[in-house]
Image 1 (tube, rainbow, N blue to C red):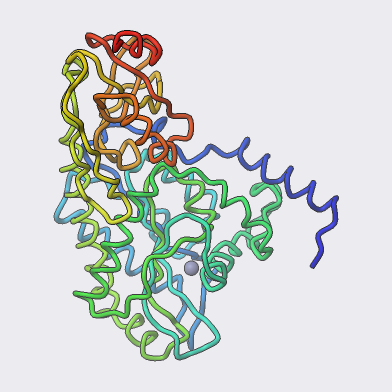
Image 2 (tube, protein in one colour):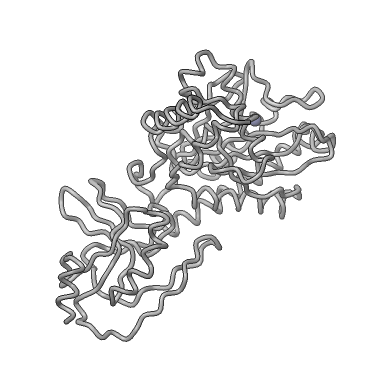
Length: 391
Ligand SMILES: [Zn+2]
C-alpha cells in the first residue's frame, strides 16, 4: 500500500517524539553497582480484564501468574538477599507503561516478563524467548503485535504511547532505531533460558528471537520476554495448566537466572584500575558468546617508546562506572581515566595508531561516536602529538 506524504510526516514526527519523550535504553546513565545482581523484577503478563491469550478454558494471565510466583519463591529461597519485585501478584490489570515504571523505579538489575502464546495453527508448539530488537520474520512481528495490543485496553493509550498503533507494522519502524545498551546481556540470559527449556525441562526450543515489545522498550535494564508455550496446542495447554508443568517451567527459568547471575558477577570482578594505565599487549577478547568474539588483534613488536600507546575513547561521563564488560556492551578491555568532573572510558591499548584504527569500526558498532586517542606517560594526548613523538 502506498503511504501518502502526509502520513509519512506523521510517522516521522511520531518516531522523533518517541525518542524525545522516552529515555533511550542506556546502561551508562542507569548503572549502579554492577558487580551484584540485587533486584529482579518478575512481570507476569496481562491480568484482570485482560486474560491474554486463551486456549480452551485456559487463560494466559493465570498460567503466567503462577509461573511468576513460583519463580520468585525459588529466587527468594535460594537468594534471600535479592529483592524480588512483581509487577502484579494477583489477578489485576496493570498497564504496560506501569510495568516498566515499576521496574525502573525499583532500580532493577533484570526484568523478566512471562507470557504464553497462541496461534491459529494448533500443531505449533514450543518455547521462545524474546529480546528487544527488530523482528526478522513476520511471525516474530505477530507475537509483538499481540503482546503490545494489550495497550488497547488502557484508557488514553494514544497519548500514553504517543500514537503507537500496536497493530500497524509501520509503528514498528521505531524499533530499528532503538539503542539498547543491554542487548548483549539480554541475549545472554535469553540463550540460557532456552537452553534450560530444551536440555532440562524437555520443551521444544523455538530459539531466541528479537521483536519490538513496548514493555522491554521502556525498561532500563537487561530484560527478556519469555513465551512459555502455546495454549493453542492441546498438549502444551495441558502441560501449562498442570501445576507440575508450571513448576518445571519456573524451575527452568530459575536455573537460567542463577547461571546468568553467576556469569554477570564473575565478569564484573574484571576491571582495570585507573592508575594502572600501562602499555601492555592487547588481551585477546574472552570468548563469552559467539556474537561477541571480536577478531584477534595482532600486536607487532614494540617499535615505539614504551610510554606511548593508542586507545579508543568510547565515552566521557560524569559517572564513575566499573569498566566491566556488562557496563560496556560486552567490551572486555575497557579502562577508565578520571579527570573530574568527567570520567573517560577507553577500549583497548594499542602499540600503534593503525592497530587502533583497525579496531575502531568494530567499537563504533557499539559506540558510534568512538574515536582514537593516544596516551603518553599516562597523559591523554592527541593522535597528532603522538605521531610527532613517534618521529
Ligand atoms: Zn502475553
